[in-house]
Image (cartoon, rainbow, N blue to C red):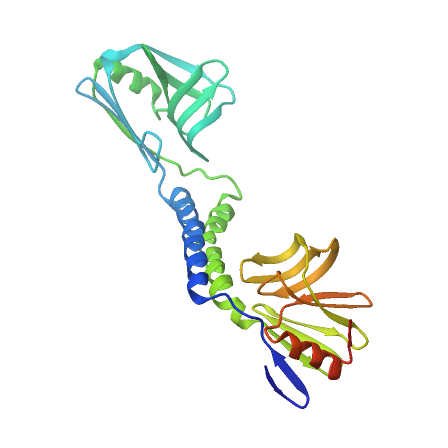
Length: 295
């Protein structure tokens, strides 16, 4: 607590630094890892390579975690068909505009492994005892001739035909790792920025993203152990709670580093919960300087 004759400044207690790190670092990693994976999957060049040579067909897809390479002996292929597929269901793999790779299921065919440009006109390689392989070669006739000749075919397909709005989605995904930086910001920096400033008739609360002023003259202040329920908007993380919450069954604005115990301020259209470290000093200052009533 510090201040002058016109204002008094109070701070809430903070979690121990070791505890903040123990919570904040793992959560940051958990948030950052999938966001970086999403960026890699969306922004990496999406390529399908087909090669028929030496009695084998090699199918290489990138990027893909689900069967990124298939090498099939042509002798294992029992039938080759051209087909028009309906709407399929992805089981495991990647389904992006112009790049559908992995395990899919179709009503007319069942489960397949495919490496296609997501179009419906396909070439199906059937194998005994194995799920069919579905492809969309750029030159189907030449591809079928190469299968019959057991060699002499190579092509690289790149997913380039992006629909309108896809660039906006890619940019949004690119923002995910930046958004993950909010996690260490909330756990390591935000609690130290929270303050309660009591002035004549006014309580000013400062948080990481700004501040609020509340008219507290003739309000009632009292120690309180809240029953905190649903967060309606704002931030609710261990060591940093700001925003609108359901507290004791009533909408309440919370600005605290802990919701186990603190001070409840109530007045006309006013219900605010804070947790100053110097609770007694805060109550007294709210009474003498803020013109509030201690309940």
